[in-house]
Image (cartoon, rainbow, N blue to C red; front, side, top):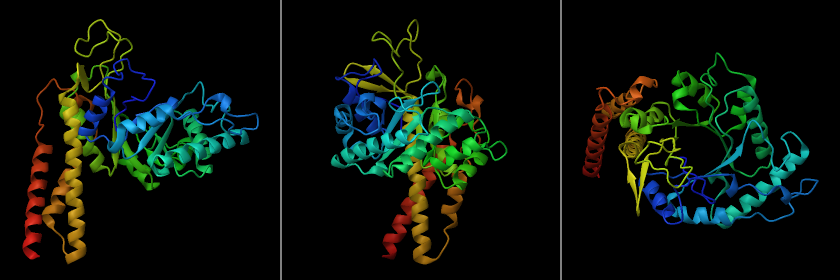
Length: 375
């Protein structure tokens, strides 16, 4: 997933009706299958509820319907950011922890899920993110209360969270508030640079049987980052730590004015953290965007080898040492996240991922040939 937020109304001045489909096609070519939408595509209006918390008005689904239609076959899941914050954790004016709040959430989700089903979308394809980058107990508690209400609704949707506190999931510093958030979250997606001790953190998360993702948010000038270490190797971090998904901030730099440009970073109001450049009739890729795609393909190759190995073990009761050795080597390509390495201004080894991938593809080819001969 990349945090694109190209649902309507467009928050990014770089996106408009003439290029939005180009952006979606480009993300599809780069293997993005979880599009991201904001609260305007999913939350009802405050006046949609009466004093008792009953939903008395139909949901306005125009923006949602258009967004889903545009993504078409590229989307496997649909991610919604509810845009709650420390200043306002309410739902249409009602704070979590009350019977009215729970009632409102349930009736909203019942209506939302029912509409999604009409569009051919199953509830477990819907992912809801309450509050961005929680980093203290107050925010962990707010997310947990929201998640509990959404779970009570029994809608089948998934709850997602992206903690950034450096040791939020470390067994040595775990807090009850974080633990409660973890218990109520289906997909936990730590900020990779904040996980100083990645394996300890991920082990604790997966010990609680949670799906794990990683995401990164680039510096204000993404072009200074090393495409290999900062972008391609994120997929290898995911592989080494048994994460099943990953995210990047952001697809496009967030343009606040129509005159802002990623081609010339001087004198505008933009933080240049995007991975593509806008041109007339095209989305122009960057080395970092192509590195993301290569990383996903690397992960796919490793998954294919792992699947093939498991199949052969079941069929023949044997262990293929070469395949196992390669998969073990793959877990060492990305070690602990090292900040100095993500910047691209000095020489370093960028060949290991390619070397392992070529060996994996060669072995897969030979395994296929051998299987055909046996049959």
